[in-house]
Length: 633
Image 1 (cartoon, one colour):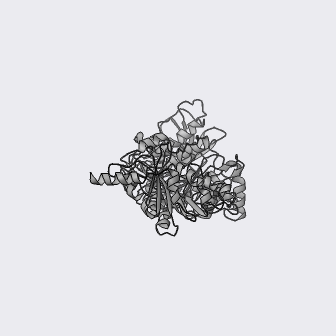
Image 2 (cartoon, rainbow, N blue to C red; image 1 turned 90 degrees about the vertical axis):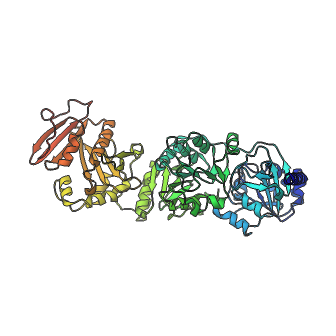
Image 3 (cartoon, one colour; image 1 turned 135 degrees about the horizontal axis):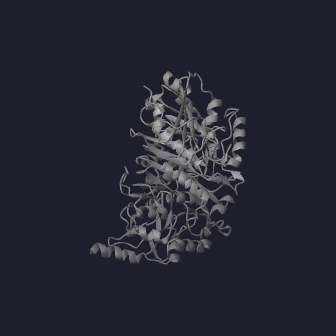
């Protein structure tokens, strides 16, 4: 009882109006303002009203959702803003030179504050009311605020009953706060932008890269919201992020995010700040699964990497053909900040089974400018280096850049650029001699929706998908790796070369009159099987051919490829298949025989000519009645 009386008395003794509390702020001080939805708006307003008594005060913070009157032109000489991250409320001030920008990894800011390399004299924050033990909660913003309240010589806090009490490293003894200003106002909200078709497509592509049981990092904006909206059919996802949003709340409520398979803080929703709706803030109040941690913990790459299957999703403004990412500058002006992008990209890259993803729309300015660029514009800063980038995603697909050459990177990025810009991008790459002189422009739209995870009869998992222009080398590896016997069966003769010109045609089919599918072990672009057809203009049948790597033969790969290529052909109105197969190629004959389709056969000089008609088709030219494919003895 005595302890309670002690803190209650100290609490009462420290209650002030905002104007009274701010009298302790002197000229020439550096003032940190609480982040995001925890911005203490009443204190900010009173600080600016006290401006005539102040001079040369610096105001520092991360993104804040409320007003920034200290950054207005009339405040020059009294306040100068210093941004760790440039939000909309201070962007003009930075671009006009009335405010400064510190490019820094978010994971490093707390140490800069604790070490006083960036000195914090005053911390203006917002907290919850105290509990029975005299502890308030930093609520929705721990991030860099935790370090600031530990380092500042003057702490002034708004005490707001609407601030949720969150768990983790969010508690502060009320006796360590110098002045307490009671307020009762709703927290600032972040309203999501409506999802458009472009963001939905990007979200769908990214969702396919996220396996069940993955731990996800997601940030602010339309694309992260679109990704979360696409994860409804996933299972046992975890969360380790810098920001927790309404989209995360909905996935927790739906049982999608459980954290059961997390390898770090299992079952916990680890974050450093929360921004969204009033419903989100009410949901976060006393939520036992939410674990608020400062930015040097949530964002430290070594900590991030301790989450197996970590998937980091970060936005960009532009990416060049070598994979360099621009995220903090636009048209030569500072636009946002480094934030946590590099922290999470590097952490996810080091995570077992992790994936680091950069996402952006393919165009800007109403479709007049490509965000996939030959080279970043002059005065554009590189936030994430080409060596850090693994996956880049636009609405046109996914470019996997990890471990790829400049030629392979350029082709992959051209393939996901907007079709209106692919020609000029490829021409520019040819001018730099980054790609081969005869490289063709990738076709308009790759059929990403036709990618499937399949299982063979021997229970092998394979991703079966349409071939893409970046598969050229992998297909050559498949063909050059065939044994003499397999090569002879596939080509009815021995082949010593599979040149670029030939393979390029195979990976750049129009997908209407022709289609090629490849089979790859999950998580790789290694091709272990391939099937394609070309429509014969005379018979209208698809002339189909298969090849399976020797060590994968006899495991049901051909059967899976047959089923998938049949589905693709039927969807495009192809009436059936035709093929020529050596009479000694028992495995291939079995694939056709077990397809369930009626088969017509004709034997000539040791070769079976086969015709397979799809069920809804009749009257296709044939050679007598259908009969079963003979099983060679």
